[in-house]
Image 1 (cartoon, helix red, strand yellow):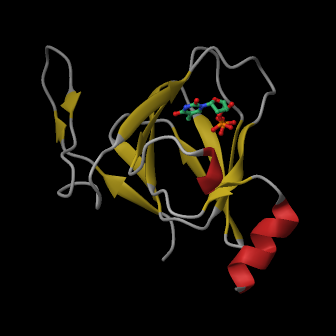
Image 2 (spheres, rainbow, N blue to C red):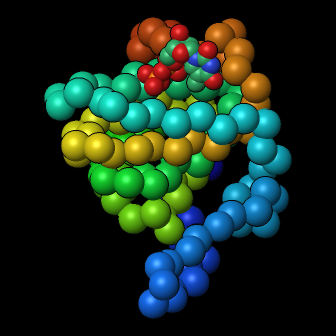
Length: 132
Ligand code: TYD
């Protein structure tokens, strides 16, 4: 299954806009964990790894950054910078976050609790996993 952008609801309002998501409705899984990445110094990379089982949704709540997604054959680049764009990542994809703007805030919504055993942090091991 490929990564894809999910267009979240956007309630436009002169008092300020509002977006939201509900589990198993706007995103295709039940939410077990939410975390966020912030105060990223210029030029830093985050998340060079894959997950065996975890599905996730990444949203740029503030600022912008790019997510490079690699299925072992092809790479895709998603530029996130709207708080109503959610990037859905199924399991088994190598992903890297880069080009964080100043004060950017990345929200990550995950289908699993934290489990280091679910990470594949070695790229060669990832390629082997993809072929299996
Ligand atoms: P990691 O997922 O490797 O960060 P990134 O993908 O953004 O580069 O996590 C960094 C560290 O934080 C690692 O030691 C594991 C820890 N961590 C938790 O303890 N719980 C969590 O929910 C997450 C996402 C990370």
